[in-house]
Image (cartoon, rainbow, N blue to C red; front, side):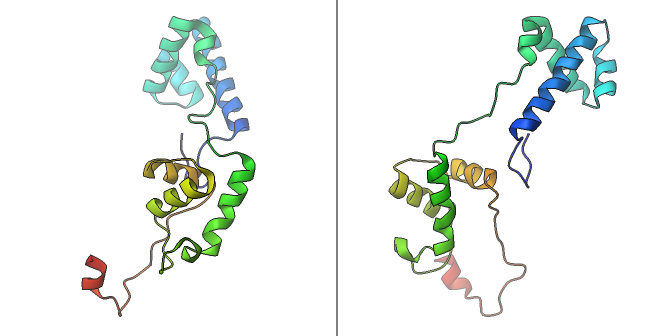
Length: 150
């Protein structure tokens, strides 16, 4: 699951979701149907079906948490440094304007940390750590469409 405010499940949330899945496994073992489990645990029928299939094939081990979907390639110290970089602005890295794009952030991560990220990976990294996309509320009157196009 992905959430705009937190970027995903926290470790505590992962443990809680695993507890729910294991409780559903107990209900399957007691003979509860997938529809009953879906209603009881307030999940979609498709989720209950996936849980039932995993439980049938692998038992409770199939419902245990696999952990985070992807491993961050930056350690805590690097993430703290990355946190400070956008606040300084793109000027120190050679860009004249004050826009941070995913491509620019990816380039800075590569230069500073020697780690290559795709644009989607940069977005996931920033989103996971609380950064968001900032868009102007309205178009500026002084906007030069020809300059924007180039």
